[in-house]
Length: 213
Image (cartoon, rainbow, N blue to C red; front, side, top):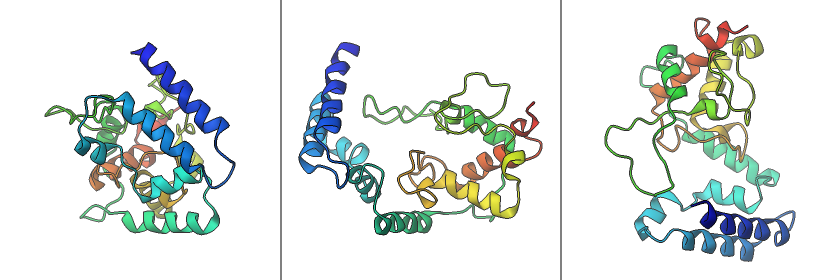
């Protein structure tokens, strides 16, 4: 698997670094990169490509502008993302931190390597520790995103902060156009209630996130 992957990575790096200008993207390079990726998967159907790999309008814009869209496009992305946000039926944006702790630690579900549905019963989670430090007891934490330990001390937990955190988890583009953070709620990965549970994991004073040293 590794030997098959390395030429693909090398080809993509060559296309994106040598062939693309600083602004506006390069249609030829993008199409060539997509062709290489598609040829690397030989056991998928057209329906699977459409369901799992076809970019939506926001993703296409972010790719085209290499995550640095011009102001008018950035405003459109943020506006559309904000309009996409859905809230729990009971209106509570601060859920159960214990359930949020479970979701943050779950790393299974949605493995795109084989481009096939997850088997029945496999849980979807946030896999938050892949990018963030949260509860200090978890030592296997990533650093691609900011350290979120002691989050209340950093941001407080006012109603405005609660809503801001909810919106960011549901659809990060609502605050940062072309954010690299997954759009958990927008893509149906997590329900509004599950997003609220993750908000509580960050903002409940009793959560281990806020019991750090």
